Amino acid sequence: MRTPGRSALLLLMIAVPAAIHAQKADSTPVAPVDSNAALNLFLDCRAPGCDFNYLRTELTWVNYVRDRTAAQVHVIATALGTGSGGLEVKLAFIGEKQFIGVDNEVMYNTQRGASGDELRQEFTRVLKLGLVQYMLGTPFGRHLAVAYTAPPNAAPAQHDRDPWNFWVFSIGMNGSFGGQSQSSNRSGSGSLYASRTTAAWKFRANANGSTSRNSYVLDDTTNYIALSHSYSGGAVLVRSVNDHLSFGGGFGLSASTANNLDLALRVAPTVEFDFFKYDQYTRKRLVLSYSVGLDRYHYTDTTIYNQIRETRLDNQLSLSYATTQPWGGANAGISGSAYLSDISENHLSAYTSMSVRVARGLSVSYSLSYSRVRDQISLAKAAASDAEILLQLRQLATSYTYGGSFSLNYTFGSLFNNVVNPRFGF
Picture 1 (cartoon, rainbow, N blue to C red):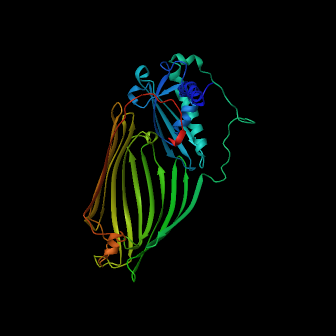
Picture 2 (picture 1 turned 90 degrees about the horizontal axis):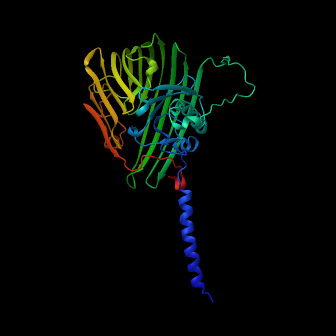
Picture 3 (picture 1 turned 60 degrees about the horizontal axis):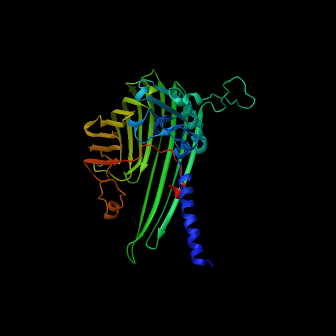
């Protein structure tokens, strides 16, 4: 007679190997028939719609590699906002290894308010089309087919009359609150936005405001309440002259308790020149701009220069560079401003950042910024209290500001990652 213990042991000996075999079968990567012959793709995505799990599910006839040096095709995806509030997405296809010199760019537009699913579907569709020319050079090319899905009641494409005449508007507001037994806070903000963009003209106007109230119980008899607000707004109108040059003009206004400003107003014409053509803006740009402005200030309290109101003239000059390349990306810029009545009252700033793929699996990035400050004309004459200093409620006198960051990342192991397994959320 077989004992219960022996029966359980027998079932366990049968079940465990079966479970292991099933796990091995389930974990086999979903890959093309011969993954060694599939196209190796490295996707450098800086645009919405890059859902890598979705891509691995919908685009299964490539090998996704995590290092660009192993890729046969390197795709750089970037995006810029359009006048309608949508996006212009550009996919740059760069051939590597046997495809050196086989490069191409594909652009498409997304609608304002498109959902995340719509964005990733369109991104995947265009990515598939861009990869066709490379797939034809692999054994998998013979499996490709072209299909066209016509929209319902398709008719020759025509431009419909735009009832909004390219105008786009946006309004938003938000609020928050919180607290504990010894403190409480609440804040609110709102924004308005309007724009109109055509090939020749660009207009933008916006207004923003925020206010906050923070309460702190310091002891049984003392309750400190910190109130602050800031408001800003402005408009700019730009005229495109050619592929490199633009002229514009605008105004801006602001108010801030932290900066001792009841009102700051600036009106200025501006000229901008891009040494590269504007249609290369997502990949590289070198932009020089210059403006001369009329400034009007109304201060909350008397300043360190014994002013409560004043009018100034200033000029501002800036030069900025940015590039996105297969090896990574870089940004750098320098800007300066000075009041024409006294050029010793000036502000100089510089920044740089870079992200570089140094070698297989190794990437390095950094950012640095520095400003020399000589133009704090709005500083209040009255000294800031300890609470205002600690809570950063008042602008403090300084001669410079700086900041920076550095990161190093090294990844090693399998180059291929075609499997989708979203269990436990990672």
